[in-house]
Image 1 (cartoon, rainbow, N blue to C red):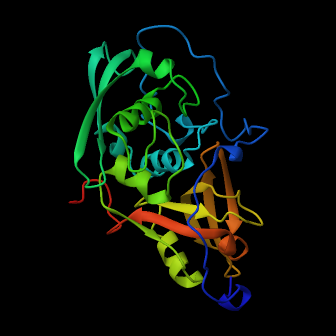
Image 2: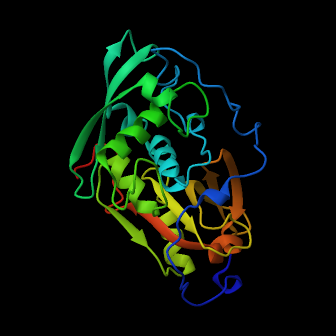
Length: 265
C-alpha cells in the first residue's frame, strides 16, 4: 500500500494493556482445532504432541494475559526450541506422560528462574491451554511463581507486549511506540524469524481493543499492497491490509537485537 494512502503523522497513544473484557462470545473452531475441554483428574499428561509445542496448543481464556499468551505463541512460531529447551522432565515416563517439569523463565534482568510445576497443579489452575498439552500452563504457573514485574497476587493481570517475550525467550526486549507506517512495517517484516508482538489501541476500527497479537508473516501483494497476518491468542489467525490496521496499532514488542534462538543474549 502506498504511503500516501496511509494516514500521516505520529501515532500518539497510551500504552495498551490486555483486559479480561476482550474475551470473545464465540470461538472459531475451524482455525483452532482444539475445542474447550474438561480438565481431567490424574497425575500425568502430554507436555506437547508429536510435532512438539505448536501455536494451537494455546488459547487465551478469561485471563487478562494476552500479552503472555501471545508471547508464547510468537516464540513457538519463531522456533520451538524457545520452549523445548526451557522445559526439563523431572517426573513421569516421558513428555507424553509427564508428571513434573522444571521450567526456566526469566526476570526483568533476564536472569534465569527455574520453577517446578506439576501436571496436577496445571489441571487445577486457570490456564490458556486449548487441549491436554500442558506446556502453556506450565509456563504460566512458573511465571507466577517467579513473579513478573507488576504482578499482584497469584493471578495474571494486564501488562505490555514486551514483558512476556522477555520472560519466555530470555532476551532483553524493547517496546516501540509512536511509529510511522514505514518504520513499523520494517519491524513487522522481521517476524517470524524473530518473535514480534503487536499491541492495539484502546479505541480501534478493526483490531480488538487493548489486545496483543502475534505477527505471523508479512507479504507484499502483486499490486504493492502490504499485507500482514496476525494471530489472536484467542485462537484466530487473519490476514489484514497493513494500511487499514496501522492506526489501530500503538506498540510493537520485540527482542532488543531481533535475536533468533541460539543467539547470544
